[in-house]
Length: 323
Ligand code: GLU
Image (spheres, helix red, strand yellow):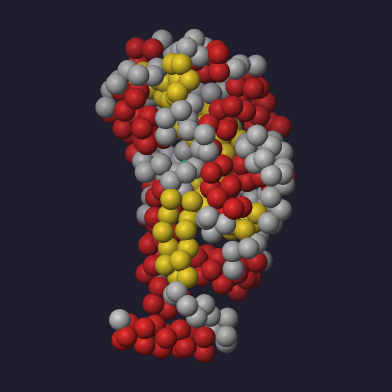
């Protein structure tokens, strides 16, 4: 123990000398809010933590991650339970602007800060092949998993339903399973369809399309197109045909972008080191999940970010000459 402490003290000293006093002298534990284990957020959070933890001997930051989903992540950052988190662009916008009081009851979250954006997340609907569902309108009268409260897809599903003039009574069952549970529920015939706002390809939709006969459903009605037209944080999106068993043609839907967010109360040094860990290891980061394959640095520092940039992230982007 003693030698470990001495070693840490020595490292911290060396670091504070090398960074001119801006170093984090003690071990700092950072928690990142992500999503269900079979989605992409969990992998993003894990990938970022692995990159950060590789450099722990230099910056003394240790990183772990949790599984709540967009809305839970933003609320967790607000209460201080989480330091950073992944969140859909729609929920980042609404949290910062105070425009979704049912999700963020404390009003505008003015301390919310954007760090960078990550992958696109098409709003994805998978239906059992025997369900008779061929379009989003066919969900009426069916058993649908609308997602756990706190998840981004639950919120975005409610927005879409609202736009379509639907309520929960339009389903024979509206279940609230977590994303990690819904593929099994679909294939056990407990529900006819599941929804997930998620990057592709991912484990959850793979499981749902390989464990039983099912297919992806287009979400391209007037409601979806209206949402994409009227809001910068939504856009129409395509899930390529052939990516999943049972769906050979491209699927058109609307979608959001996944973003990485924090709070102005999370120290600049912490956000700086995490941002740096990602961008200094960018090729490695992109290989950590197939949904990251097309990421480009110049887009990540501006697309889908409606809250102001965190000062720690901006410091790194300026150092790189990107701002
Ligand atoms: N977009 C989902 C959410 O906000 C999570 C997606 C994922 O787990 O990759 O809850």
